[in-house]
Length: 134
Image (tube, rainbow, N blue to C red; front, side, top):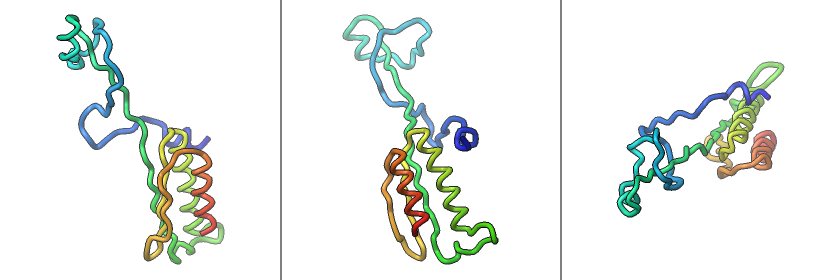
């Protein structure tokens, strides 16, 4: 699929640090990073234990879509609104494959509709349907 090839790669954060959340504590094994040693558990158990982390991979994609009258302009083949719908669908299905949440704000000269971020194919199809029917 198109979304498999275009958006391949890992997420990179603007924030410094490991981007990890704590998962568990396990006994130290040779080769483990000594910076991960949990000194409290190590002191209680009398042998080294490390904190195990897992990557935080879930993101939220918010689409902000201009549906004002100017978006009806375009070529014979396609309006700007149709192009926006295609781009939104591509981004939404890419986020769906990564198990990310997708939300949308439709606006003209004001916010017309807000669809809160959720996961799932049904939700993505709802967003696309709302965009096409606006």
